[in-house]
Amino acid sequence: MVALDIDGTLVDHAGVLHEQVRRSIRRVVTAGVPVVLTTGRSWHATRPIFEQLELPAGPAVSSNGAVTVTFPPFAIERIHTFNPAPVVESVLRAHPSAALATEVVGLGYRVTKRFPDGELDGEVDQVSVDDLASDDVTRLIVRDPEASDADFIALAHRIGLHGVSYCVGWSAWLDIAPQGINKASALSGVVEALGWTREDVLAIGDGRNDVEMLSWAGCGVALGDGSTEAKAAADHVTGTFADGGTADELDRWFAGEGRRAA
Image 1 (cartoon, one colour):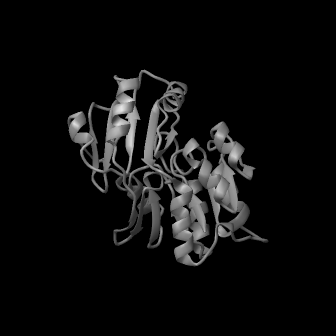
Image 2: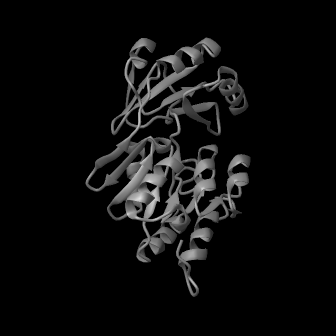
């Protein structure tokens, strides 16, 4: 099985899927090997990439492992939630200017403040902090465009975040998930359902939220321009995204003579 992160791995940071990557993934599909999109994106932001790649019906992991679906037709296979209220209180006590968002699976987000344009897909409904924290959620997003990723790493350490999982993105973006939930935990369920093991998985990613997946997979590969944490967790570091690292790695396994299956 091939597990693929999306942003910075399959699409560039403008969200464009390059033809070279698409062709390489078609080779994987033609070889009869399942491709599982494994992303921090919500499902409604994952679906367009699934469709652009023309993947056959099968599983996809979104929301950093909190939501696993099959598509098409759409069906939720597994969903993990937590009570966000204690975390919301801790975050706003330490960082009062933060904007918060929670995901409405398949539709969009509820937010306490406006996020920068283009950062959230789907329907966006602005609500009070109390309303946001009143229901169990798949994830809580903390955002402050005026801060840095280093600021948010320090914030996460400072407030503790006990009883949940979390990761900091490339910017001041903090994703908080149910305890023990990440891309690897979701993929473990997918692999088990298929009757395989983690040794059967080639995983490719670039971000801090890929660390567990890259460590867990039988072969974890980080992009050359990926985060320091992702590269440290990987078994192998390929070229940068701009230099075709994703396509090159897939073609090592699924193109030409001596093709090996992951």
